[in-house]
Length: 196
Image 1: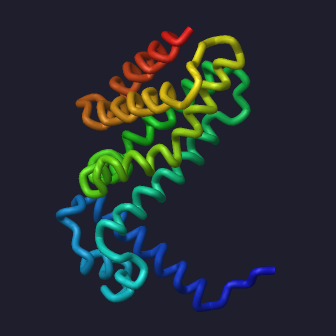
Image 2 (image 1 turned 135 degrees about the horizontal axis):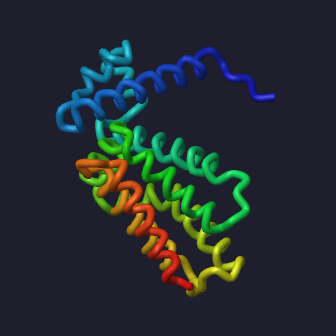
């Protein structure tokens, strides 16, 4: 039985408070407009405590982004749980992602700030770590049902993931995000059906 010490529990609680405060600040003011002092004040910790848990502000943004990706994986899994129809499962998963793009925090951190601050390669690496497997599994499910044909390898999944990421950016930037979400969902479905 692994029992955490009070010190470990306090460290986890402190780290979570810092991450929550940073997420709120990055959402409101962006990366450039947020200081470590502001994060420390919002988390009710010292600036030294922030640097104890995070090397710098960029690492703090990466942690916020990773936390959002982890939560989104759970959301997508919940949205698709118990669905037997592979097309419906795929559509619901895409819709859950697009819905997340409407949330101000996800839009600001995951779609706008993370690619700019972390660099495209690091941002893409994290995105693929959480979503490439889901995309491969979705396409495999459609292929096993005889609904599409997917070439060997994960190139198709990577291309589709990139298209869905672009779709998320379009939804986030739209004047009418709900209408754009519907339009984009249909378009992504058409792209996948093109693999028949």
